[in-house]
Image 1 (cartoon, helix red, strand yellow):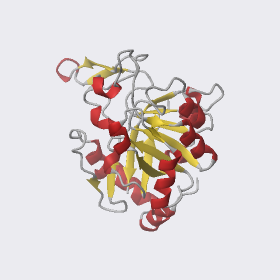
Image 2 (cartoon, one colour; image 1 turned 60 degrees about the vertical axis):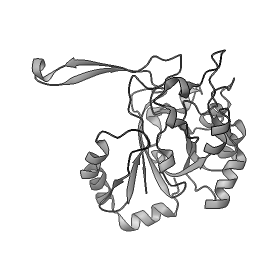
Image 3 (spheres, one colour; image 1 turned 30 degrees about the vertical axis):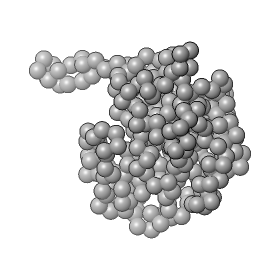
Image 4 (cartoon, helix red, strand yellow; image 1 turned 135 degrees about the horizontal axis):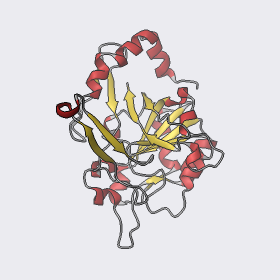
Length: 277
């Protein structure tokens, strides 16, 4: 993956050793601490190298909204310190619940499974493209090619190897599943996503590693066909759905880090996602 100027700048100030030490030491402890409610979380200050790190991950919980085809996450305490000398839970979940990754094989029979995504594609320049204003008025608003071109007019052409995230503001609804799923009288969900044209533009006219949304699906909630999924995953890209805190991340200049699932033959799975600046 050919990185943008922000990566080159970081490399000048942060060696691999320092980078690993920063993420593996006190910073990791700070990031792993329980997060405040959505919209209240503050970026963790880094002592060296990157200035800030943002957690783009919702806590995996039975309270999170899920597609009707999937069961909510189940967390059951199996062992206690008082009885067993140690504490441990049993967790049961479908692959595509919580903040999760879609591997190409999720929609493409001969596509790569999520555990086989090259690790360098999980580190990418992050472009956050907002359609929040339009989505607030129209739940079926989609990311359009015009939105991507407007972002480029302001910030420059999408860097090679970029990850494009749609910010619709939908994550503010995650605490109220009925509002998040936003079903009509017929049970059809209404939520923003990528248009087929925008997804096709990104894979044909730009060089991206993947795309993400703060909703449950790369496609709009009311979409009758998975056109955005097929365009993106069919081109060997990956998706990340149910992202959090995109409103807090700079629209340009951040680097995405995805802790991708690595169970054998994964169609996808819950991930821990960070943006560093």
